[in-house]
Image (tube, rainbow, N blue to C red; front, side, top):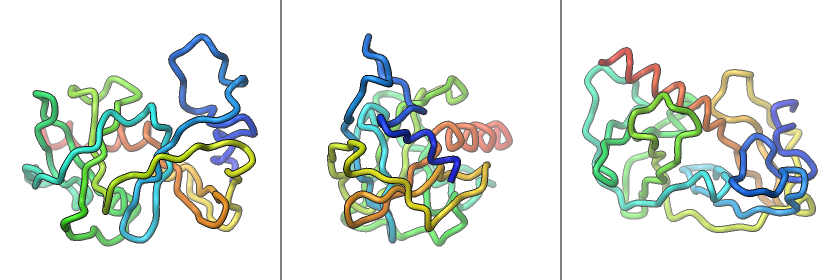
Length: 178
C-alpha cells in the first residue's frame, strides 16, 4: 500500500521528532502497541500523552456512535472515540481492562490539544526498527480512512492510525454538534 510509505526503511517519516536529529538518521523508535477488541494499533510513543483509567465519557447529543463523548483530563475536556467505530466496526463494551489512550494533537483544530481513544487493555511498549517492522501487503485502506496501513511485526499485525485524519474527523464532528 502506498499509504504505508510513511513507514519507510528508516522508521516513521509521517511523524516529526522534536530533536536536532534528522528523521533519516533514526534507526529505531519506541512505539506502543495499543490493544483493541480484535486488533492492535501501533503508534509512536511520542504521540501519546498519557494512558488513563476508564471513566464513562459525557455523551454529546447527536454524535455518531464512534464518538464516545468527552472526559476530563488535565483540567480540560477532551473528546474520546472508538477506533473500531471509526472503521465501521462494532464498538466494544467497556470492561475492567478498558483504558483511554490520550494522544497529543498534531494540528490545532481541537481546542483541548488532545483526544482519547478507547482501548481494551494497557498498551505495550515496543522497540521498532526496519528489521522487525514490514508493511503488511494483505490489507489496504482507502485514502480517507482512520488507518494508514497495516504492518507486520515478527508474527503479528498492527494498524497504523492516521492521527491527523482522526483529529480532523473529531474536529468536524465537534463543529457540527456545536
